Amino acid sequence: MGRNAASFNRKKPRYKPQPTVLVICEDSKSGKGYLEDASRYFRVKVIVEITHCGKTDPLNIVKEAIARQGKFDQVFCAIDRDTHETFTDALNLARSSKKVEVIASYPCFEFWLLLHFAYSRKPYTAAGKLSAGDALIKDLRTYPGLENYDKGLVQGVFALLLQENRFANARGTAAKVLAEAIASGEMNPSTRLHELMDFFEKLSLPQKATSIP
Image (cartoon, rainbow, N blue to C red; front, side, top):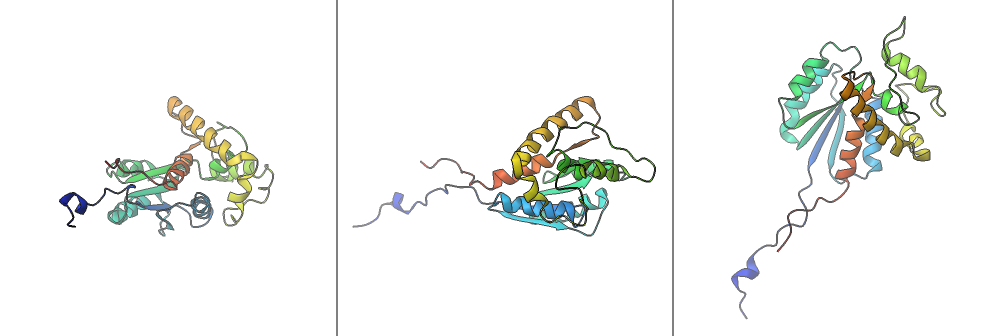
């Protein structure tokens, strides 16, 4: 018995093609290691490359992202505000690309870690020999398990912060702090890292395509 024309029609895919994602980190240790652990935690079912490009200032990191964006569906730049002179230029350049998004932390990545323990809108600035980041890390070391925290030694930090719902709490607290920072016009302190966690979580789930008739 012959097959009719309809039988040769291919069914539409049930799920969208998996995207490719690049995350460029400012540092090669603390932020990079944490984000690698986060992507494994969410069991991201996509190609996610988390890398340090050898550049540490925001503008050159964004330039690297734009140069590499052709190979990816989405590119994130995880950078610190700190005292970088090129920070504003980096934000402006990122806006010129639909694929590149900046995940900024004020003053630095460690503020995201601090939010796992408490809500805070305490601004951090340089004082004496301490940079804004150093002052934040000094506060971070007052919390259990992080007494000896160092940017160069980050193994186990993600697992530690999963305990007692700290990770879930940080995601909610960070969103609240960011909303308040935007409303007040004072971004110090704040972070967008919860948005990257939300993105990882979304990627871990199959994305349904249009319905199949």
